[in-house]
Image 1 (tube, one colour):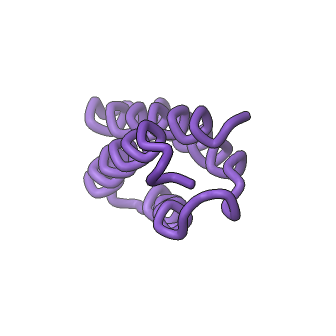
Image 2 (cartoon, rainbow, N blue to C red; image 1 turned 90 degrees about the horizontal axis):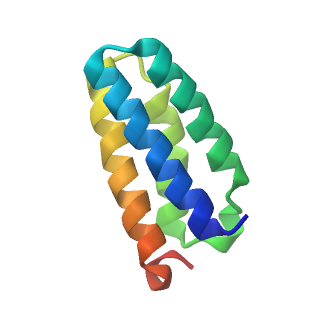
Amino acid sequence: MSIFISLSSLAMDLDRVAIGLHRGSEKMAERFTEEALKRKREIDMNAVKPYIKNLLEKMEADLLSEDNGKKAEDALMYSTLFQNAALSPNNLL
């Protein structure tokens, strides 16, 4: 799968994590957190710019946080950053 599709899919999963946490649906948030982490493993870290690699690494730690409010905000932030990167190929590779 291309990096662009994987990154866009990751952004959608993270958006769903944020929505689930905002609505108080922890099961939904957990499920999409698992999907986001699986999606992260699909991305070749050597094929993306260092700032994307750093964001991906930090994202995983932030998604494992116990603070659901912070986790929702972080998931939404990462979703936006990854979607923007996927839409701007020059900034990604």
